Image: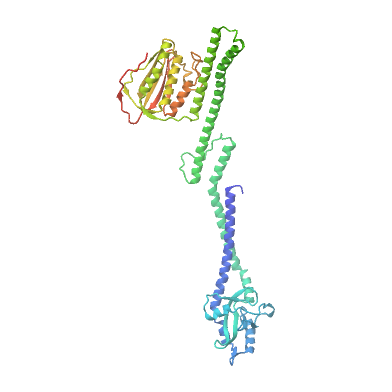
Length: 502
């Protein structure tokens, strides 16, 4: 009973058994009702005819001798009826039935009065003197006459011998044949229903087996419910196809989870390594100051403090980048897009690096962008991407080098390219530079870079519906480009000035 088919089969069997019992009950009750109605209509005037034909009334009184002869003759001629003589109160005065089986002394008069008035609908049932609670069809008339009644001639139409014959008839060949016909019909209907249920639940059973197999394989065995070119049928087919697509989705998500787990393990290991270095250095210099601070010359003590402060700032910067990357991955930061010209944002960001460029003897150029375009993006997040790319360019540009920030249109978007004049990125490193903690060429020039700037830039670009990519030739520097979607109502305006900074 653990399968749907078994439960449906049990319900069907119980339903057919109930239908069979209900049919037998209704047919038996209907046949008795029909026979009572037919018998009472046919023998409606039987009691009155007995009084007239058998001369039961003589000189205005009941002839008791003729009544006894009528009892005796009708016991032989028509044993299916029983005749009773009642007084006006319903008391039984005489009868033709077996004396040992008459259990009543009185008969209820209401059905008799209703029969005489002819106000009831047939079959009209009256008391059976041979039972305390059974009722039967009857015929009745007033005696000796309706004008001077002294009692009633009460004829029960289905007497004891009729019931015995009826029981024998019900066990006869035709009734058994009828019963077997009904039983065979119900059995055929039951088998047909079971077969139909089996055909209907076969696909559900197969789908259940596929689900069990998929679960037992630890979601590795891809279930194939149906051929890809099959036209979708009913709800079962749609459930099967949806389950198949869901299984593919589950496998894909499990693969992504495994990839993310491996990345998380590697990330934790890299974070531990990158944070341990500044922490160890900071702890070492602080311990040195704590142990021999009074004995150190002021110049050396100031140098230790400067190094500890620098390591502390480096640690703070790495932690801030970690929190920012985690916030972007968790979608805690959502872009608030608006329409703005990217050329003005680029100019403002480039201006912020003017002092650093002069201090490190690096030129930062921004060629005239030409026609000014408008994009739809988050200004703050876009500024963060641009700052990360320029910071990365400073890390890899030698003294006397050049950093170029260029704005150029592409299909349906605006591209912002940041190019440095460093040694470039090796071809084997190029596909991995946007991964967290990856540093092309091993480590950066200054040792301050944590390898998270480009990963943060990629997350922001993906959130804004853009993209980021890099190209490089060894010895010729690297160019990293990110795109921003154009505004729908994009009115091009000539840029009024050159935004180059040297």
